[in-house]
Image (tube, rainbow, N blue to C red; front, top):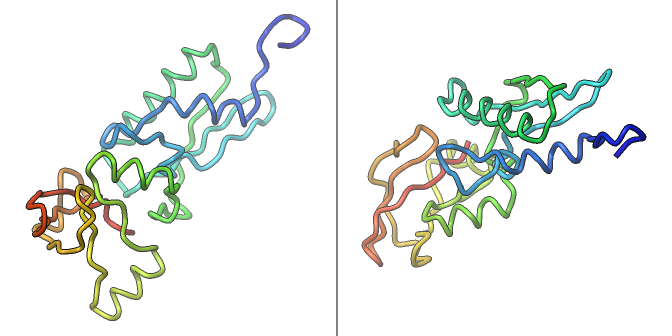
Length: 170
């Protein structure tokens, strides 16, 4: 609190507040854990919240921006703007290890490799098997390159016989 009794916010405290903003397509992940939240800056008394989409044209970005506005206003913060950037492009390497574990617990296989190793796969034609988030088996097969969203693919586990989604590496 400052001398006038008004709570003072810092970029770090804003990042903490923004943990409340979840990805609408994967609601167990905050935008911070997913790596969509790039930075929070304070310039001339105004916060700049910098975000990046997981895919160009990602339909969830509008909902995320609305949720950011709602959460900030709920906390009495009105001196902010949201800036969306496209460069550097988002990659699955931005996801925290916590996010990967939360995906697994939610029944979605996290990206099975880094962006760098994914590029190596594209050149070699050999991919790592995707681990089933339910039983841990690598006896899985790709059934569709597209899942419920563009960032996920559908797989089937031959061991536990469960279909599951994988968050695609990119």
